[in-house]
Length: 380
Image 1: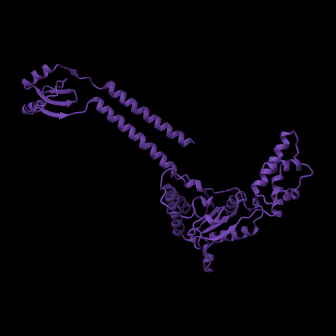
Image 2: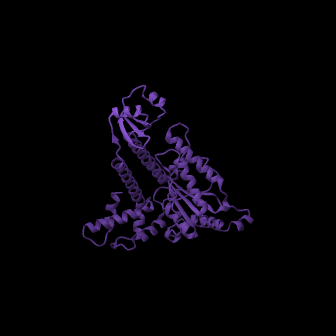
Image 3: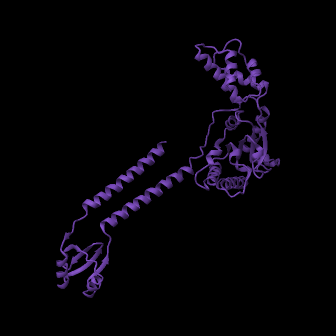
């Protein structure tokens, strides 16, 4: 926000300077004495003229003694020839109006291309992808997913000790794909994984690669992986992966062409680094079937895990967690809520409990009850 305000201030200041320069040129330009055409002819016959500059409807005359004046231009087809025959230096000059027009044209183009440059820099700014050094969450903040935690911790260990595992013939996978419905904690898990391994975390989402300009998406892909190499070991997390990694369609439309370029750029980057560089690409998707097959083949995304809806025990743990710091009646317990929330994702469970507390508050009650939970469920 501050950078945008600074850029607007710079352009406004630049515009003011241009206007001031033009105004100064208009009012401070030295005024040359005006003379009648008859005087010009008299000086010409007396062989007193050194140079004549044709400026539209005006003749800029300089005498041999240094005197300058302007005279009307008769627009005669033989005047130049007559001057040349008398060894007068003749040239064509621009009028003040023409010069002023050129200044304003130049200012316009500078301003126009300046805006394009700033916009382009904004779309591919080095700050597009932030490097998070401490995510602030660990596996203690993630309910359940015990097997996934165990598997991912092993991958992190391989990332941090590649030489030891290389002796055993084990390499770190380049990419890990997390598939599951929205709200089940894929993003939280990715952040917790980086926090647990104490390594850098670079989050991105599909919309980060979208742009009104063609070819910006592939450039952002290259920028993302270039930054990852500089901050290795790190996890590159791409959320909504099916938004940019969909199956390539060669229909020829602009959108499909851009999507194909982004997928191709991803393929090149995944093939361009080796496991011992300490970069793990963690991608989250709602639908693996929508992804391009070349992206998720072995050697690119080697590990694929499903993040399921929480089971009964997980729902109990989630309910207990979301009940913390809230006031609730005696008929509300984690076990009762776990039965109520069958088939719900983690985000929905939190939302219902929060809504129930709001309903109770609106009715002037400090503690929410099971009836409030059921009322909140009807609005989901």
